[in-house]
Image 1: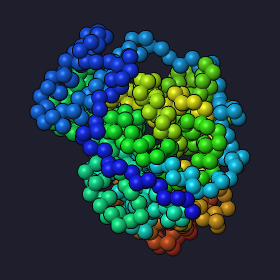
Image 2: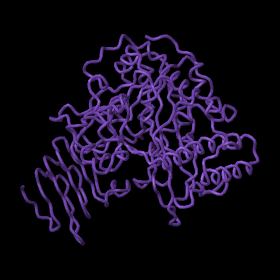
Image 3: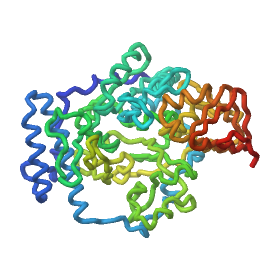
Image 4: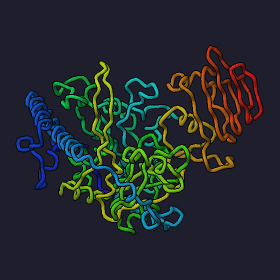
Amino acid sequence: MAGESKPLLSAPTVNDVKSPRVRGHSAMDFKTATTGVAAKAMRNELNRMISEVEDPKAKKVFDAEMQSFFILFNRYLTEKAKAEKIVWDKCIAAGPDLVKPYAELKKAAGPSLLDKLVVLKLNGGLGTSMGMAGAPKSAIEVREGMTFLDLCVRQIEHLNEEYGVNVPFILMNSFNTDDETQRIIQKYANHNIQILTFNQSRYPRVGRESLLPIPRSAVSDKSMWYPPGHGDIFDALSNSGLLDKLIAAGKEYVFVSNTDNLGAVVDLNIFQHMLDSKAEFIMELTDKTKADVKGGTLVQYDGNVRLLEVAQVPSEHIEDFKSIKKFNTFNTNNLWMNLKAIKRVMDNDELSLDIIVNPKTTDTGEPVIQLETAVGAAIKHFKGAHGVNVPRSRFLPVKSTSDLLLITSDLYTMEHGTLVMNPKRMFNQTPVIKLGDSFKKIANFQKRFRTVPNILELDHLTVAGDVWFGRNITLRGTVIIVATDNARIDLPDGSILENKLVSGNVSIIDH
């Protein structure tokens, strides 16, 4: 039983907000930055918007965010002008010195180390791609009427109960998810868990041609702003004052993962390995399959560890990047970091994350860009940083209804909010599932499956067109169901399909 941990201070307030990186000698201030016409024009627009905010507290927050944005925008212009690209021959797949197999980790000495830990979930995404109107993705129901957020809370609550510790649960929301999340978490008030929240930044979308902010004021419509990716965690933690509060409360490490990854539970052995190796940053990687060929991977580049993303790869080497032989692991976005190291990197103005340019189109048809960053890219800034090759069970993301079918099925059982592979499954690998556009939205997905099929012995499922599943259907081996144009396929209750192709005229063919 671990000792009582110090209670955390209250959640960050607007009074904790501080201007970003003003301590570093390279701090970029709005008045002195001179990086060409585009930078000056952007600076003037941002200054004008800041000056129009009347409430002092709101102005303080908005000013800090716009300064962080301007630094990122300025870097974008500079890098665009240099037009430097990755030198492919310098990208060397991470060897055993950089990626430690999970099976070789020592067993944790005991749970007392948990007193130094906080768990942080990235909760900025909406479920719009799956048809959820304005709700956080974490509010999607997964199993037994419980949402992602419910299950994450249950995981931490069980951890605290099992080991007699107080591991705080922190949510990094976005301006899109904060209001609804605050409403949802009220129901956990009587649970054995302390929940803190803070918001990632709100940055203006930028006109692709004009290179000017799309919003005209701080209160312009939400659609003109965007959360700048999970790489913003460092600025947001620091600017909110929460980083300092955590350190003052005796917390030394943070475990970060996505709310939609139900496999990302606290692992004492990985945490113990982090302490023993004195690593400031550990990235969990897992074996790449054909479904993961676009996932970022660890490489050595000019002698340094680096996260290489597919967007950075020269077009002529994309197939090399996807090769499972050359790069056999990918980033799960389960990350362990040292809080004092984060503070050092921020205080010394060392952070320089690779910029991801995300082209979008507004509702009015205007082409815009969003400048984003990824948290994993920060690995290059931390001492002793390396990867741990973890079992696939620690990576169960839900990016689509195809993924949702997997985790809601009999393939998994649930224990204390954690999904566990059904022991009756003969293979460790999960089936490949590809549901067509008719299943893309959650409402359609739920209508088209009267009950979730039994897929314990399924290897591959492809469904396209107007297909409806009855109750208690069993799918085994490779099953392909294609309803051609103007055709509808209704699979009756109790159907068993094993290695079958079901075509538009509802004929069933062995193959």
